[in-house]
Length: 361
Image 1: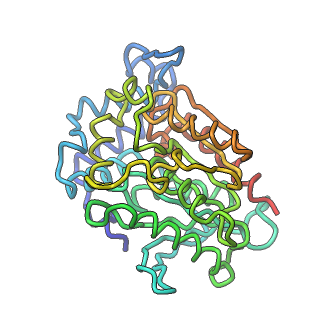
Image 2 (image 1 turned 45 degrees about the vertical axis):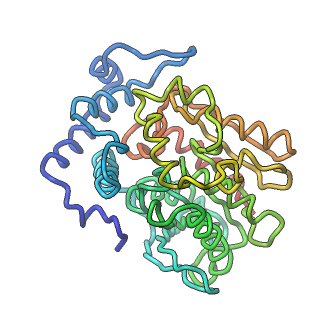
């Protein structure tokens, strides 16, 4: 059982009611969603999705407390419950195994392996593997909070997904998460035959802080046999040393706030860490050449949007094949809504296509 299993948290009657309301709202006609969401929000020629505008309005009406205003333990519990209440019906996969990655003198790392069911249209032979790092600012989140995302990728991309429960800050500050991420990728390369997937075809993927770790892992393993074949960076935070303009433009009112970003970074790095260290800020690396092809996804109404796009440009300038996709109507955590929001699901299927293309034999 994961350390933050939702079953342990025991959602309240109110949590269950909110989940039912969210599901009903997501299934309602688009016109009704737009009406319930209120006046459309536009910025820089972008219009916020009515589905996400409605979700933001629901959170505001519920009196949601910002994570940075809570003790860490309470913030973790809140994120797990919000992930649960905004999840849709469970996506079934072939098998799920809770593992401990423990070898070579490394710190043991908890993980969850999802294996796809054999279906027509899958990969010939054992499926490739995606090592997935969850978001949550290196402080919050777990394999449970991102269970809907990893199941979605496993089922529809027909890949194995190793979701990594890396150590969280502030109990384990930088670079503990980086060390766990590197360990997990090396482990995944070696253990495919044992667990029924093809470790020779491997991608890393993650959202937000998980996108940061995915980018960092590729840099750390560049030139080695363990280097991933593909990196999928979803709304990644890649520059902890300097704030891009979107951080001010969208730092209030679009779920992820500037205050929360400061809170995450302070817990993760501590007061004496060099914020320009490429293991924390992969955009600051001196050399980005020789890295795996990248699929970079950003959201229009996201304070991290500009730095994600800057990283895509920097990779391209270094000769790395890059696809950059901006979903203009989305907010930062949209990937967590793949089981509930039709618009997030459409974006999720684009990621599925990128994985299938990038990991083909």
